[in-house]
Image (cartoon, rainbow, N blue to C red; front, top):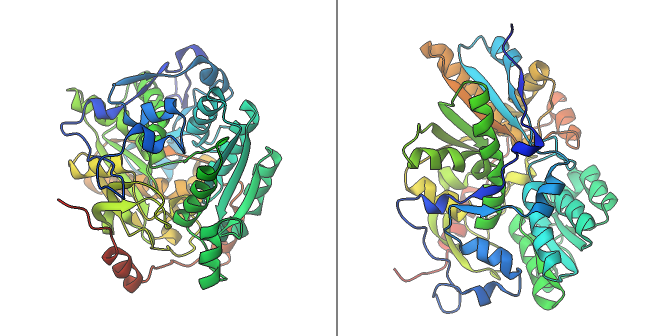
Length: 454
């Protein structure tokens, strides 16, 4: 009998709790600071932006947080998601390694993002909120929150980074299909957007700017809250359902990963897969190598400074300690829009500082080449963001080939690329180039980091 290709859990086996890695870390993460007082923020400081149920999750150190049944009911549309053994890719590479991938592209929005969009919309609706504002890069998060808002009866406005707004019209159409309003950022709708446009009328936008616009609008209205698609603790918490399922599925496959990889921009899909495995190791279990794969054009983990910084460009957010390129840094317009963020999730950054993970960076052309090789072997066209994880997995598999090692590799295929085919057309036409950031701009952005007393 041949080795199975896919490993499926029943709906009844879906996790009932999210996993909070903070319960197992040997050292607590640095406090989030109020930029005015430089003192740790209180729940009241966050109340204008988030409902109290989400604030409680943001500061929780409990190991398990229950997933509400109404959220699990929606999750059943696509969860548990499948785990695949990449037999054909293994054969194409001629590697003795075993390659597995957790496929999150089966969600209605096509990525892992609904794993947090659904609970965020649920908690806001429970709190009587009527409207949500958010930002999006590639559009994966924006379309996911648009879907979640429709399910729970919330109006959603999405500020999409202009370069992605122009590159990905079908993502914008998907958001509108779900009932959301999509606005190119920087926009004339906010005070901060108008300031940016006054100085740079053709500004390509950034996630930091889009966050500023969404936060500004949410803070002005009592019936409106803000929803973030990555970076914050509660978002990473929601995504751990990925890794919890994957652990069960790896046991079904009678295997355990030696290496776990995921692409990293803000950190949500990476944490979603990796944190449960890191926690397993911290509690005395077998600990795999954990590798974060980021773009060379926006390398917060491999080139950023670990320091307190703002999460947005207008400096409306609290200060968090994270690997950052500087909040004023604008990355070039490469096609992995979901990875164009100046900072890494504070919790991922803390885990990196504790030595519990590694980080590598690759250029976009090499990542697209890896994605094409994967598509031709496995049949799934990855999103540009997920191509970074594919590239990382292929590099590990080729290392195993050189070393003659039969290691087990697990990576997160965080979304499909069906709305990103223009990027693939550009790749095949030779128009897709490796983008590089301006070293002087990076130095300037890092020199402007806020001064925080030791």
